[in-house]
Length: 240
Image (cartoon, rainbow, N blue to C red; front, side):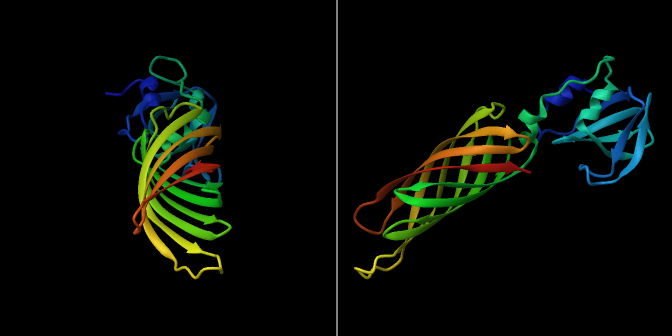
């Protein structure tokens, strides 16, 4: 049994596909062989033809014709069809919802690591709309020492649909410190660290976001006392 068009657009991106039948209500709709403007148009569906909506990927919808031909149409072209209720399907603004259908995230950021200049890179994978994991790499350059961080973290976004979407995270990894002073001969050292973070994604357009974050690093040193280091950063992320 087919679901309604409204139910289709309310699905989370990770849910099973729900086929929806709609009828073309324009002269024609171009069908591409893959989701992207750079791919060729290999078929055309004309007014009155019934097509089945299979799944959504950012600005594209995978469809199947009554003849069994499968391809991709632009997301906006669905407005040129009529659902089972005789109305054009409605769906959320793509600028707000695009990133929720993408599983991968990459970003770079700049900030401060306990007084040192910090440049970082993160690569993430989204399991659900609310939960993701990421690898964090950072290079920190200070007056007396440089350091590098390699960590893995889990993030939780309680309200992913908001334009300013807060998140919290926990992580663990390694901190390598390389003293640069020549006054005292010091050896490089490597310590374990735990991370707790609080931040927000700020939507710009499409799949592009500003990401601001505060991280508290708890460094498990080999000395008598452990250390706490605060860092903050801001940068740009893209989902794909």
